Length: 557
Image 1 (cartoon, rainbow, N blue to C red):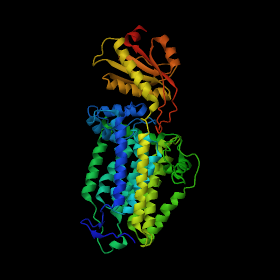
Image 2 (cartoon, one colour; image 1 turned 120 degrees about the horizontal axis):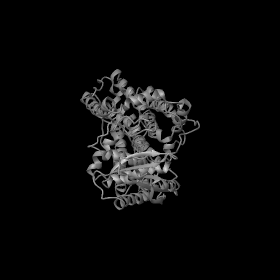
Image 3 (cartoon, rainbow, N blue to C red; image 1 turned 45 degrees about the horizontal axis):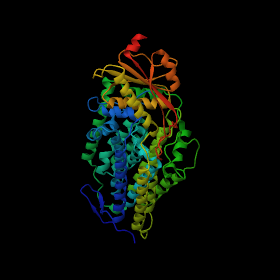
Image 4 (tube, rainbow, N blue to C red; image 1 turned 90 degrees about the horizontal axis):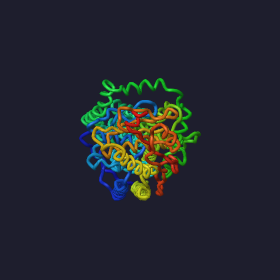
């Protein structure tokens, strides 16, 4: 027998459904919260020494509020991503909980949990079954990446679940719900400021939601004769205020700083060959093929995105969902499906305009986007089934699937190591060696003592030196980022610092010993024995060295 849904008209004109939590929903939600809670505790219990971009990001977070960042992290394209929203979001809990690296991993897990919770709360007011389908879809997307990917603070990974959540929030805003009105613009700003690749999707769903809100709101059949819901102006105002505040730092930088926003716009017209339509279609269709990447547990993030065209069978579901919704005059599901289509077009455009090779990390948010699109489509189709269909049974089965996925998340997280495990032992060795060298080969350190850290150009050396930079800064050393250099020029002499250290390969260390540099430590990178690390550097076994030169040696040369 079909589940009865009692409705009444709210003060905003919405038809309010009975939103009391049934046992299946309650079990699924508690399982979700418990699984992420276990993951958070596990993350906090680990001693993590960040390397590569994550170490540079933590250095920026450590500067808040004294050295407030105005722009985002550096891009390989020669500019910085638009804004510091992610860095500022990480900064408060980081400071409150002792400025420990593991806190950043825990906060990222909470951001992903918040994305799922936001989706469930928003859509539950439209359709409870669809809301639980969305939870399952986002859980699948979360499990498709390596366990440590969910804990990594690397800026592209903000989109793993948040890009899918943005689509749903836009749908909620189109339904004139307060939660969507508040969250749409701030969430879109977080994604765009973290990584520019999210901009086309954010623009597409925002325009689609705005069109639905301001240009038409036809009632669904059961609401005929009732007024359309009112636009939640206060909620929109609050969301706009947050958005304006978030974009003030990049605007300040544009006017009186580096002019980063101008550089971004200029670069879009000056870049070389783009991925193009075919490459974008290959990547997008891959996420709607069978089986899709987001259906593979612990698949991880691959190197290049799909390089061949697969048949996007799953795109038939939004088409079917739209047909069913139009036939039933189910305006809510029509709006949800239409915004999904807008998001798909935005994702395709984002890939098409990217320069050169399309790496999967750049489009990792497409997994969540595809999972959400499929969930909305299935929900629309089920709403068109006869009244004899037992929706309570569907709800119960979906909740059971969600519980199973929560259990898999717990197991995968508890059996995972820290992000970038190859570098942990070497970072510990190098930071201790450099600290000892600073004390042994010069006068005692003072607050004015300046130490530069640089690296030889190379994947492992350039990943190691930011970690060493962070550990020295954490130890109270006044550090300077010396960047990377190539042979035969070698590291540049910097007379403005007291001591220079550089991460190199052992053969380069030996070559530079003749020009005034001395080897401080040598260590071989080692792979963690725990699975699911998500580190694909293939760095295991590579030997690295740290070399040093003091100001006296510079003057002597």
